[in-house]
Image (cartoon, rainbow, N blue to C red; front, side, top):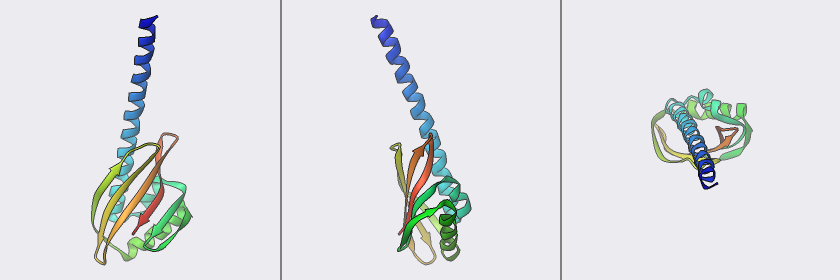
Length: 132
């Protein structure tokens, strides 16, 4: 009886570890896609990881937008603010809600970029993006 309980416990722990590793890999891939998109100011590529609706705040304008609307607003931001440098300041994977903070330098100013991710069906999606 004790061996059976121990075997079940070990199986459960193994499964938990495998799920955690898989989620970490997915999170790292999404963080890399976000970083590479921000570095070149590519709103279209960045929108690939957006949820269907997200909270977007660019400078002082904010609201809840569809994926497509958010992409258009970010295209406008990147058109007038060419990215010169991007630094990752903080990255926290605390599923189901995780976040990343960047410093984004343009010719005009340096912005703090906050991105909140949520795990939906084992896939991380951007649910909030703030450029301040």
